Length: 622
Image (cartoon, rainbow, N blue to C red):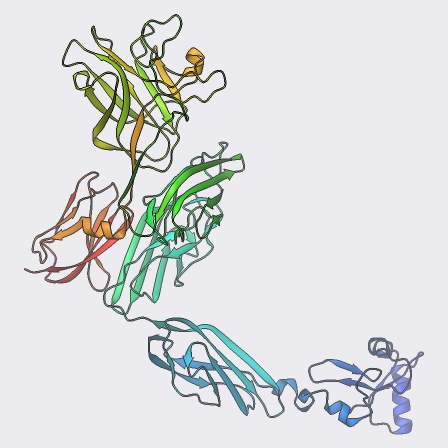
């Protein structure tokens, strides 16, 4: 207990000293000059004497409150902190070894607390045992892979305590049978200078160690699994590299020019677009979407009908979108920057089944319910609209607004009239890309001889090779005006001013919509034969092969699905070191790898194609 005498009303320090000398006081005295007024004001002293309790943790208890400071039991009831000064309270600390362990092994912990402690309370997340009371815990066994927290509460005899938690302190890794395969993705690959990128590790075969390198990024390196907020300040294109380790060794993946940093947005509004390689999927198979938006988008808003997650505000979804239910689902992308935004919806773009399905096929048509195609004639025009005529229309194209399919393998055509003098007379069925407001880019064509067609007959024409499409497309035909030739396709009846029109005509080497050319809204009666063809991991594995294995001087990698530009084969050893890499030629089905200078031993071949990785074990024997 401390007694403090407070003098108010003007006494100086000299007055207090004189009072002390006269009365022999041994408790502190405070004059007005020395700050007595501040003490009275701070502690709310209204009468003398006044009792105030100051606890060791600096909190204040006034006699006017509960408890009664004149009763010793009430003071004791304030808590154990009255029994120790803060500088003597425990400071919890500990260490463990080893901190990175294989599953089903243990860690030894040592307490390293400061100041007197007589009680230790441990918590080991996912450990066995999970809790322990005592100074020296037994070896803690971990049967669950991943990162685990460890906590310790240190308490002294008076009840004063301190707690420390070390988050993700123990790393437990699974034992792998083979080397890891490094893989990663970013939440965006187009970045305005000064902005940041988040990276996602997609490696597999139980990696537990990650070493990232971000050319042009800040920070330039990272050892966490999922690096966040990597800032790119300077315009340019930059590489990203990831080295991963599992219980068998290392693997490295370097993607050159992966991040593109632009100095400014520019003045153009983005044009939204996207794609994915795999649209025909099994339930809960991740679908990876690729953003194809142009004109420097700065923000993205996705809506995945039926997907999990259903929405995203990132440019990319590295872990993909899963579809837990079967059905046909829309995908919508709203992409924008400071100049504006653009929205694209691809209807029925993802098709989900209970099991893997290789192909889904159907016909599509622009005829409305109840419409029957007929040979259309126009006032002032000799011949037929949809065939040869006096206006010498050379091509007709119908616009098909469908996103479900990625191939056209043929057409069903209502041929109403056909004649020819020469056996070499022909027409061409043509498919154009549907991204423009008129037919522009030809995707493919099929020559059909008039001698092989019949009039007043619905003709099925199968193309020599399926035509690849991704979304809406134009499909139509070109006509030759040779003597004796006649070819007329049935058209839908005129739907009138403001009616639905999908037909375009090429007149005088210029594409015009049917309403603008002839004030007629119509469609052809052609029904394209379309398919959605999926590629899954099982199909990919079955379509790729390596021979001979074992090999000596040459190794051949075969791909029945054909290689694309950028596909490659990489040979690496057990430590993950790349021995050689060979890129594929676009459209080829084989990559030849020179193994002449590779020493005898066991290696691994990583095949990258169709957006997927296939890893095969190989042997080199000299």
